[in-house]
Length: 632
Image (tube, rainbow, N blue to C red):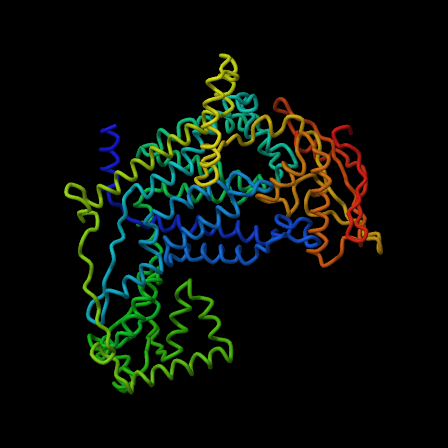
């Protein structure tokens, strides 16, 4: 235990560049934002008792918009920790408590969302960094905050978001005949209802399909014990990203694929980001801006622009230092140079006032849209008017440190980790101990979940422990602990794409809408005519239709209610009333594979559809007449 603590202490004290962590923050929460936008779009399907027709008791629209705002704040790094906390609380409300549309990426969001409250992810590429610069800078000095963080900021999210997931997953895969036969990648990719892309050309390469299945199994088995080793990092990174690119391309869970790829960004060697940054930066600036060095407003503008100018496209040159001597400005009145902001391009063209700002915006990618908007008549003239008002006032009220009343506070110099919180305890030591205890708790919570995995349960059954008194006592504690860890930390069973998901799944259900007036037939974008998933069935909506509404063992009542909800939702989204259509329920009978077979996916897609019944809406009452699907 002492060795583990000593290792953790060394890792905490090891400081590395925060660039990769910031890129992860931006990328992961951008994916998260897409997920929440999708929840917002489907909110009536998810929350209404009957979509649009019988609304939910609570309108969640405002809450979802507030959640999106919090996520945007994390992306741009504004009040990063506070925004991460607010986003996490919204996740508890909208993710942890919902059952009908959950899928496994949600629990990655929960775990990483919890960690983001504590990570130093706002050290760089953030509004927080700009605010800190402005707080401690003046016209004579520009403060540059440190951008180093503990290497644990990289290791812990990978541990929780990938390592624990794979660790638990192998306890299901090694109890799965699908995976033990090497079919773990091939089988789900060969079923139309679980894919949106036909990968037959790859699936027909038996050796490659089997290899990818066993590679995934071996990869997940060793990941937790090797990801922190320097020699293993790059091979694991390449394999991990490659597998999740495949998931993104083949399966209707794009945010899962992209979100996991974002986690792998934390494993990219730190020097890689430095090399990329050096290559994308321009050798020569595209515009030189001349500013008044005695004006705090001008200096703050320089700080803000420089902080978001990742390409080094804009160079600032002080008038007092060298600008007045620049030959290109020799014919411009000195007072006018101080009054207005001037800029110079490499070709020798001079811009003034609002035109300088427009040129700056056009050369900084994150400001491109404001720059383009300044070409629009009206917006340009309004911008020029407000700029002139500010510039004129600044000229009359000469803005210096003395009359602007700006007194910068002293620059922080104390390393907070060295602050004494007790006689023999520093803040850094307290943080290290807290991290140690926290990781120990997380590890125990993961062991509790894995204790109830398929492989362990099979072993307990073999030794006749499953029904023992001791096991019943253990479960009295294990179950509520597992429920807590799933809801608040995203630590949950990861039996994904195993036998139980496919055994007996021998049918695909699609819906056609027949317009009562024209007789036109339209496929609802749930299942396409080919049998592949439609544009509605992505992420949680796919999980809802394919494994809640429909499933290997069909619950007839749940199926009929699901058809009711999807038909009502689709009709309203197309500005039609569901009473205008007769909905035909179609079934395609497919095979459940037990071994590798060439062209299996194409054979399933070629199976015919059977029109097994109809559903209609009459005076907002849903009527459906279909046989028991399992008896077909």
